[in-house]
Length: 229
Image 1 (tube, rainbow, N blue to C red):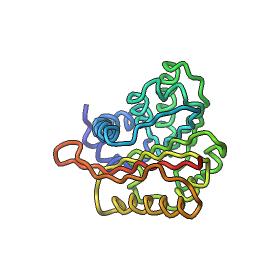
Image 2: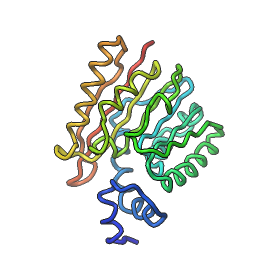
Image 3: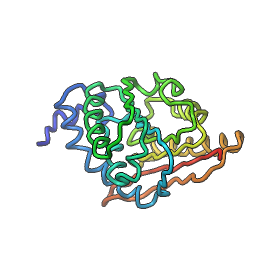
Image 4: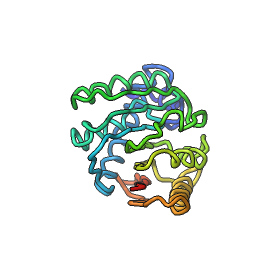
């Protein structure tokens, strides 16, 4: 049931969740919207065709909804390739819920992946310490977090782009052209392009889209993929 006082306290989903009641309110308020955003994104994104081990990193994961939606969309086609899964969030309550949920998915896929829990704000993370520097395919999820101007997006992505030989970035947020919205997506797209050109990476995809996922509701997304092979 909607608690409007508690909903207001969530600060449009930006608050670090501190209780089970806040987790429930966030899920009630935003999960349907996030589901609709990603559902449309999967219809326009370059499909994943996994053939080897994947390291999945959900940045600012909350209760793990984006990872769950990825698993719902691809099922065993991707689930059986997940060997490491990193969940990053400032809320220990949300991380606890996310870990329990993704474990159930991995059990369904009969996959015994390593789950890495990182209870930090993104600005306090050194990516090289949470993402493995090996040849495993890195799959990054940014769900309703890249547009938030509470962290240094360019420095973070600069660090991420140095790790691994094959990387995929799926980023979706509500669309707006103010308060750190669309401009941050365009910053990352430009950074991605220039970094790949300067370092000789092969860009296999770099698509930025603005789309409507329901009446009067727009989202912005980035689908970026690179490979050194």
